[in-house]
Image: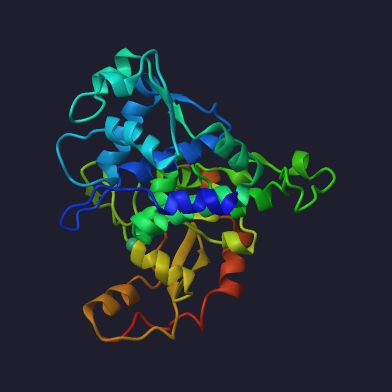
Length: 325
Ligand SMILES: [Zn+2]
């Protein structure tokens, strides 16, 4: 049953011409998976719920074009046996040559979602839901876009999500632990971590101030965990830093770290970092520089997380000088 669902997912027919991307159906499916995970009802109303949000997803993650067509995947996904549509008329009878139109979906109160049997399957098997989401992301988008897309459709990475919840999985593959559900805090599974961290740091890298946008979308700015999520670090702003990709990567690899200073923290660069390029010089120049404080005092990094990073991640020792001159 699970394999059947995944193979239908892998087999979605996407309209492609000359190597063009075809993100319509994958984005609609990811949107629908997000709804399942959020416990929303199965059928989403096209006019009120889908059209605007899917258009926004297509604008942000689809191909660059001036007009988007959310009606296309909404109507056509039915042919892939992954999508039910109900309406007050037979859409196939009234559709024209180009298929069902946006107007027709609105006028006939169309609503769509996974077939009921697939919906039940996904609700009872969160690992399957995660597998489905990751397959769609891997198959259709570069890794650097995955988190942004997950954020946009409200899809929490299920492994972390359900582990944090200590599992209320219906299939009882992992038995629930007594008292666990009530002891978890909402922050440990907060899908808004990225948003909260970036807002706290006013959407600038805390190390270098990087803040490049493409139209309204930030490009290359991450919400980094100081204590890794994989190591039990919470999704809370005091465990986060807004970092550009360069500083996120170098921070996670331990090439740079934090050190307590009189007011907040300063950046330390490892003495194991080396190179000769201007980029290397730029990185080394950060050594000793104060880390930008978040807007609110309560959002400042907690020393326990910084200490963990320093102990478990930071490589070598802090440099003694600001680098080669
Ligand atoms: Zn930076």
